[in-house]
Image 1 (cartoon, rainbow, N blue to C red):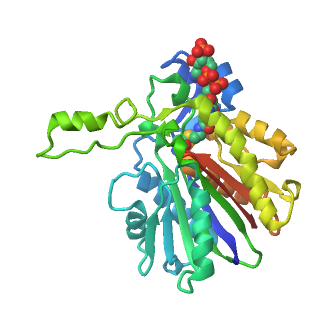
Image 2: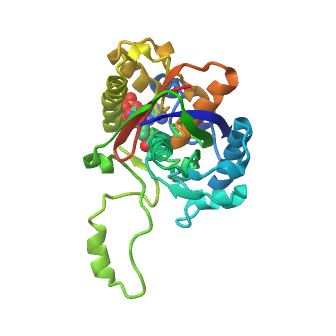
Image 3: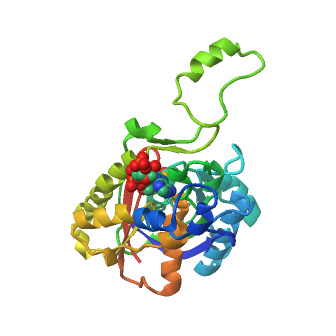
Amino acid sequence: MTGIKIIGTGRYVPDLVASNEDFTKIVETSDEWITKRTGIKNRHVSNGEPTWYMGLKAAERAIENAGIDPQEIDMLISTSVTPDYAFPALSNLLLGKLGIHGAFGIDIECACAGFVFALDMAQRYIATEDDVKTVLIVSPENITKYVDYTDRSTCVLFGDAAGAAVVRKGDKRSYSYLMTEGEGAERIYAHGIPAGNAFTDPEQAAKYAELFPKGKAHYMHMDGQDVYKFATRVLPVAVRKVCEKAGITPEDIDLIVPHQANNRIIQTAAKNLKLPMDHFYMNIENYGNTSSACIPVCLSELRDSGRIKQGDKVAIVGFGAGLIYGAVLFEI
Ligand code: ACO
């Protein structure tokens, strides 16, 4: 397996900001509780921007940052779990909006770990397919449209954003580890449109409806404590697995960029890995959890600030609904 190189990144965040103080006006909560339990202070939320629009802006910036002609892109992977349409795929829509011809698009649904799974996929296509040399990953999320703003345990956690990255073959090998624990699939979910048509018998449909967990319309349901335990358990596993493959130790990684779900999850994982917190990049304070957009937004900030430089070993680690998790270790 060859390696990958991220040659460009971009991000888009809505202008509209909801602070912890704003939440005290809609649910029984406080800035102190949210800050202490999650590390979040503000989150940018959609002011009606469609998901594709956010993705388009991030993608345009990533292409510009890479300094390439959009027509050089061979494959576009979209990781959004909050697209505007059930079909067509968001990747197809984005290729059209970007005016890219001669490329193919694939959507993957890997929740908050979407960018990690997409980077693994890009790495494999680049390694095995001579006709895929440049991959654009776009991760736009409008997760707040699934948020129940009467449920204080979930509504304070989420924000909207988009991140994108242009990926090409790198000189150094990259390593990945992906895993699904499907028995936890109903720990985090949002219902889709129920099955039914003009001929469906309502009594029979009501029986089938019992096959699903109870939910409030399309809103996100999350068993916070179970997910918390899952995340603190699997994050160190994913880091150790990619290190084992690469023959290095976690201390040898220059920077770990984790999914931004909760500061406390990362603090616990850092202790487990015996690493200081400055080994992890965190921006949750300003954005909250933006699902699959978290990691590429971090990477875009890191490139812009110069905090990551050529030769650095970076591990991205994601976890989320599925329940899934994974990591990719690569060199900048
Ligand atoms: N403000 C004030 N009090 C609150 C709030 C709030 N916003 N939310 C919950 N509480 C209360 C609860 O009602 C409870 O009160 P009680 O003791 O009177 O019943 C108390 O705080 C403790 O509740 P817990 O649920 O035990 O709080 P916890 O410390 O576990 O924090 C949280 C909750 C932040 C959700 C945490 O469990 C968490 O981060 N879980 C992981 C989430 C995650 O990683 N998601 C990632 C995937 S998301 C995706 O894939 C879409």
